[in-house]
Length: 300
Picture (tube, rainbow, N blue to C red):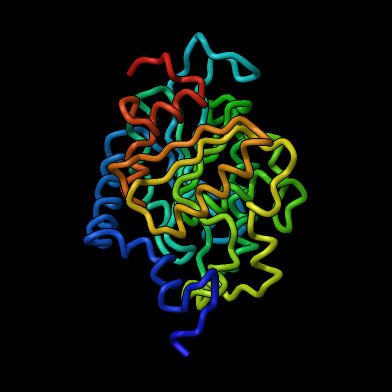
């Protein structure tokens, strides 16, 4: 049975490898250790509000790093910084806010506020509920924008890997779970994402997700994009599996007729170190993100 083709000419072993981004790097634990170390440093070195509850589930918490108000901002949040909301990856099964504050320092230096979202994980929490959690985090942040001090019309939602799928789901109207926040997101940043979940359903990842065909479809943002989603930066590393590259290219192609899209392929990055460039002005990804957030002319 191991040789049976299950998807696009691939047998199960090949499909499993294609949806294992760690197969392209020397040591996944080294990256995970660095995520936690850099996240601890971010919380130590910058003011932060930790463990803010945005919903009733114990996992529905976030950390908020205040930004710096300016006198040049425009819109309903005049004088307030934009906010980048970061949704971590981990194959919908791992990581949390404790490991995911590492992108904050360069974004804070550029003038943004940063929120790091935790959500429930598989197998205890299903994918429909995870997507609803991310939407609730956005809704909660927008309702508390005045108290937190960011511009509510400048919220940008960023996700990496599994988090990119969850962030992309928040761009869709009429959600299956959670509030509709699609019209209140100023922009999105999608890093190394999976946007069509049918191959995920056929891979080892589904042992935890337990998706049937209908659940895979309703959680595939590539197949459900609205006519006019928010503007998007879509990025991937140069060292990704062929399936992650294909998913990226399909998403870029589907978005281009609908909205403003900035595509970034960071040749020297991989699936796990690409988020390090968020907010780093000298990188292609960082400059694209800061431009989308209206911070391209800001100083550190």
